[in-house]
Structures are given as C-alpha cells and as structure tokens.
Length: 96
Image 1 (tube, rainbow, N blue to C red):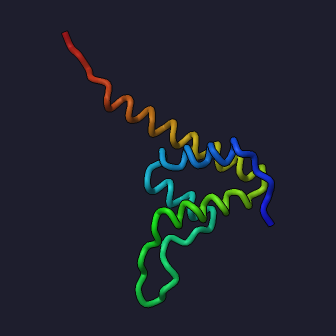
Image 2 (image 1 turned 180 degrees about the horizontal axis):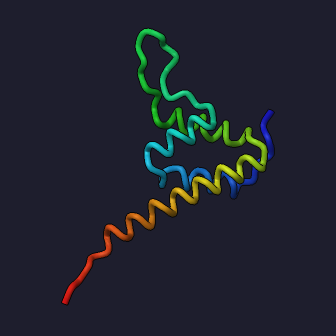
C-alpha cells in the first residue's frame, strides 16, 4: 500500500540522495530494503544505479510520513556535513 506523499518531499529526497557519500547512499538503500545485487545465486552482479534509485524512490514513498521525515533529516544532515567539509578543503589559506 503506497502512502500519499507530497511532491516537495519526494523532490527533496531525489535532490539530497546524490549529494551523499557512496557509503551513505548504500546505507539509505539498505534502510529502504533495496537489494544492491541481482538475484542470481551463482553470479553476484551489481544492479544498475538507475534500478537502485527507482526502487529507493518507490520504497521511500511507501514509508509513513514520520519515517520519511526522519530519513530526510538524517540525509540532509549528512549532506550538510559533506558540504562543510568540502568548503574547508577548498578554502585557500593565504599567509602574508
């Protein structure tokens, strides 16, 4: 059963996800119960990023409103942390 989800919340999810580190995206996918590998038992081939993203969006929309808000808050905090870290690294230090 799919929950009613606002377009703004879904857009926020789609915008924040690519700003995360790879390991954080994997964590989000695992929280959303998205399989990262194809079902073949003989050959563990990774799924395409498009398939993973589509399933993440579908499973995100199935969460209740409170869980979606919690997940978005954590994702935004991680993205802000990464953004601050990148700004510190890119700011040149000038000594006179």
